[in-house]
Image (tube, rainbow, N blue to C red):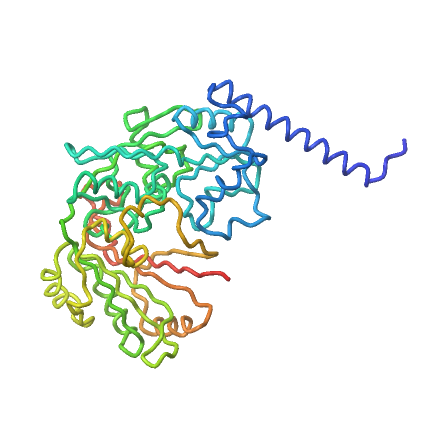
Length: 441
């Protein structure tokens, strides 16, 4: 038998593949409709296909790193924006049945874009509509749906109480679902631990579409795993029950900038030796980047960026005892509410900005960037810091942020890391988290 030429076979194979793929997609939609009457190809507020006019805007709105928004990046076959928990259940069941991968997005800040990219056909569950925050001051808790951003959580708490907060990150557009399930560190962690340490319950959709909580069978093991094990590893997080923590009506912030000429390397070296031993009310991180010297030339700067849970009057003698080498002055400090510190750490709290901006889900500036984090158990020697300074003098250098642990982070149990029990203290008091961020041109 004479075979047709390859040029005819290939289009035929492509046609059969496309037909099979289209059939799978049609059956997936049928499955959704059979699971829940709210699903329909015409339900533009829940189900989006690439043919929908709003598909691109829905996909891009939460992407914070433009590296993962290129024309060559595989896009989701469907985007689901659930309005109800049952919509999540139906999507999980049908994705499993039709062998479509799932990606779950609550904010879109992830460094590698894993919540909205894949190497195979996939369904994106974007939890943007599940963002309710219910604050209960009678027991100092709040139920927070996974699609809420940190700014919405902080704003909702502050509306109910000026002396309550929650220990999580400083970027207000981070999604709660992924942030807490990854641990969730911020400026209050030395006082209260990670965000995940301050969760008392959760609701999650498992791989079979069941909604579980801490009281479900095997609930304690699952509850332990989702607080640090990643939001998409064990199911779809629907909501967290968090514990609110006490904050003073006024706190103090400062950013003390020192250049190489002002002894930045020696100050960073000293900071490494002492930052984990500061009073737990004092958090000082270091941001290293290129800077200008007094003559306008290139140099390297270290910004000592701090939150203190108290007044300037209380802070200055503490700094004199703990870190006198920095030479902190009162004029470098500023008192404000704890809520305002979120805007300060995020963008310097420019004049004229309102705290209502915490409710904005998208960042004004979305760069192309590459970021990497790691943990350092021993201080970087002064020779290493001098080597880093040479790298940061390069025109394409990024920034490096060093966060200190110690305080509450030194008393978290080694066996049950996120349970806030005190036996078997984990010896991580001298651990630093080092993050490097490079802006790509």
